[in-house]
Length: 244
Image (cartoon, rainbow, N blue to C red; front, side, top):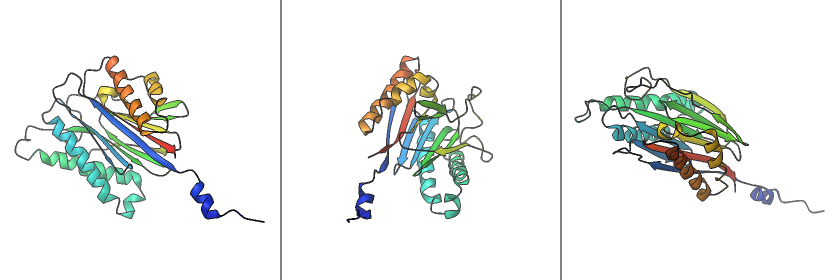
């Protein structure tokens, strides 16, 4: 009797990977004040500069760069790696302080602030941190769940934006499983405030199991937001776990 080679079986077993795509539109604005960065398909960062203050584009870019820098350095400490909520708070605290301190630099004393979404993806779970009015959803098996709270009272100088206060920023934190076929969607308010559940369903149905499919989906989502009346800066990111 011949027994199967366990190494061969392991090599033949399905492997999961993460696909993502991001896209932007400027809308009717003169400047693009949204910014997105990804690190190693495991940390996705999205920021939207507060347009009621100057330097929104600088604030968003600086926030994303600082958040990714913080992620890469903080994860080296096992204490934070084992406590993802504390890890996320540390990322936001470091980024908020960096934005707040930039006020002291020449040319930025008139203020700057930004929203921030940070998504960390592991082999089986996701961890999401949010400050501001950008939005995130999880699509699973045809069901869509909004992960961030609606913020209708987000004002011209929002207290939950990064850079407003030196201390006291407390980001939202959400975690859950992230399995094969699940889709995570991140969007700044220029897109998130203008898309419906049907728009999200239609876009998610385009994703398939390829990068081209995910790219087509995120572009269709921004198209829907524009069709529904958005004239703002808008950025959307779709992250999907697939079997290869």
